[in-house]
Length: 458
Image 1 (spheres, rainbow, N blue to C red):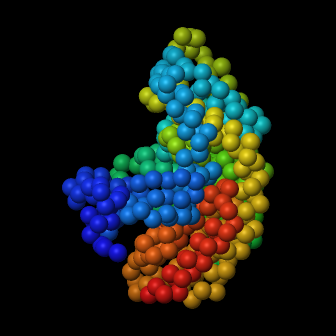
Image 2 (image 1 turned 135 degrees about the vertical axis):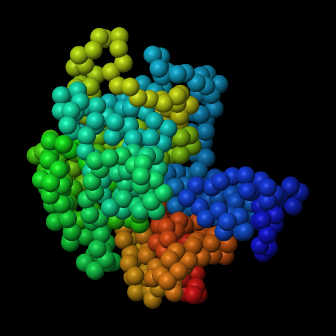
Image 3 (image 1 turned 90 degrees about the vertical axis):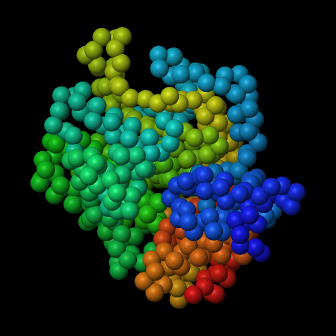
């Protein structure tokens, strides 16, 4: 197997490979660009649970897109819905006008959310959904006359997208450090829920750690609860390396927020729509927030789309109870592509498939096998922790010779080239997000392949 950019980017011998100039033109997100472009891992096709690599191999996708293609790539019913919608209505602005599919999808999505959360604001991504949710929280308190409520609370190791609002409440330092001087003011952070000493190799929710939520009471005492607008957390943290909530943590978080009149936002861009075996983690955990953000699985990632789902009280306070003239805009926020008709059509088809194929139930049934396969690595000499919740999992590797992330990236690359498996690494944490309808034999084969790599890697 060659190692030049040209040989690795060829679709077939009769086609022209990507040139170095073409490779350099794309500034890739969250990627070590210099390293990647020395040995690019290029995908040229996808169907079902497999990618087609540029050198013609079938590669199993053990991350289902980016947590997001849960029912498989290129699902024909979504393809058909997209094509049909594009031929009927390609675009219609949502400013003082609306397309039918956006309204239909909003109603369907609200029907999957917890009871009372029946209003949907569409965005183009999870990052935009988070910024929208933060704006809605601020607008709600302003509409109530609580003008001092401008503080926001996030959590260490939290990931809420890459926009300024999201990285302000987020708690992953590399995402923040370049922009520290320009982040939102009056943002506070809860401690991470993770402590390896007390939680290592836990299957599901750890017993230890619920007391960490009491830091919110301290934040309220020091800064005044009347100055806090909202708390945002991932019910189970994903991008940082799969951190399930300690037992009792989310329940207590809800109690404290209710006590102090603080809105609770669940960022369910990853956990929403089947990833944890239910419509949302809110239902799985039986903890109901005031706002839920979602994206990724909403269209099975075939068209970009996100959303903020809010409870009736918030909508009524901002919109129905607005003191402004009926002709005035109640909430000055939105995007050119909010409720895009093609994205909405893809979303409707996706929700149809979830229902018709029993996707959430299938995902729940896969959890036991997935956990067993993950925890078969508990005793591996290069593994220092294994964590899982729903169909989210992580194997954390011991860092090699103080080279943070080197072993994780090498594992990712060797799995791709040698074992025909795609997984995600975040530094030395290997992350897994299998298809919601994955075949058990594919999972077993893929984790066996990963073990082969870990057994031979330095």
